[in-house]
Image (cartoon, rainbow, N blue to C red; front, side, top):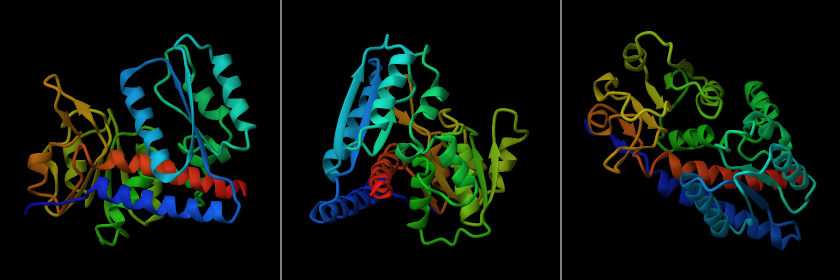
Length: 283
C-alpha cells in the first residue's frame, strides 16, 4: 500500500477562491470589506515569515490587511492598549497577535484581551467553550483545517478511533473537540502517556501535533489509517520534516499529509475564512 496524499496547497487554494468570490459579493451589496489586523511584536524570523504569508493571503482574497509591527520592548500594557483600539475599530473584523510573543508578554492575557467576535485564531476561552458545547463560532484554525482536509478523502469519520499526539490548547485539545463533532472517539496523548506506540497503533486516524521531528514511527501506523501531520520541524541540515516518519508511514497509511504542503497552508486558509465569518457576524 502507498498512501494517497492529502494536498493542503490545493485544498487551501480552493478555499481562498471561495472566500474571494464571497467578498466580491459582499462589496457589491454595499457591505464592508473584511479587515484583518496582524500584530507582530519583535523581529523573530520565523514569526516574520508567518506574518508575511498571512498578509499575502489577505491580498489573494481581497481582505483588508492592517499591519501593526511593534518593537520587541513593547510593554504588555502597550500591547493590550493596541488590542483594545483594534477591538473598537469597525474596519477591523479579525485580530491576530503572532505567537510566540516576547517572554515578558503574558500570552493568555493577550488572548483574553481580544474580542471573542474578532478572535480569528479561535483561541479565546469564549470560542473554545462554544466548540466544547458543540455550538462552534470562530474555530481554532489548524484543527478546523484538518477537518476540512479529512472531508476531502470521502471517508465516513463517524465511529473512527482517533489518536491525537499532543495536548496543546492550540491543536490537541480543540482537535479532540472537532473530532467529537464528527462522532469520532478521540484519545489525546501527551508527555505522560504510557505506551504511545500502542495508542497510535489502535487508531483509524492519527493526528501528530507534538512538535518533535519524526516522533511517530511508520511501524506504529495501522494498515489503512489516515495520518495527519501537523508538525513542522527544521533539522540541522535545513530539511523540513513533520512529527511523523513520512517515508515509512506512507507505506502503511491510506491517506497522509506531506510536510511541507499539508496542514500549514490550511491553517492560513481557515484564518482568512474566519475573518470573513467575523465580518458576517458583525453585519
